Length: 246
Image (cartoon, rainbow, N blue to C red):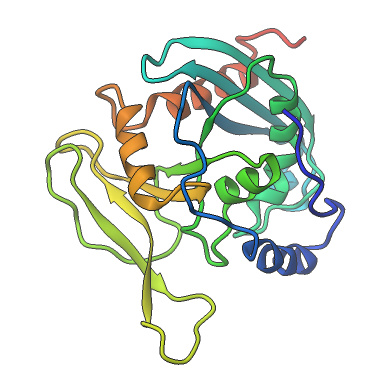
């Protein structure tokens, strides 16, 4: 898969925030993919090389992608890449730290997923462009953010049954005269009865309602959807040396 060249990567944190605001204008949540045959799960693990490498940006990123058939969720292929980090840890700017490695991993795929699940947030982000949204823009591919914890926003607790959800709300950004003070930026979704909910947000090319529906479709009785759960396990195994470096 080839990525669009929408911006440079050698930027400062201040420049990255300004880029997020520019990129937000390109985000489209209309349903761009009616037929889905393949889905992918993507995640990144970090190999930090020194005591303060988390803050400074030194270290390495391990990006993994697993492709599955849909709706059967039979694995088709998996790839990983490892490359040096070039951007420091800054809250709200993790996509600038992780996406360069993810783009290399997607470029190595033989198959082309119709939909990508990211272990992270999409629209549920302070500037409405988390890693799932940013990646979807670059790959021009529908994406969904599935996060284990909340980044921003407020919500009521969803019902205890699987499939119940409540809206994740945050002040509208940017605010404008006459608009409602809060907007729905995602969903707090119960994927398994009595388990803690996950935080789902549309990344790119899908409305929130479809993102919820598709997330439930790739849940296999576990709290975390299968694509991101296995991608998380994959990069963790690479980091621990359980999977040989190529």
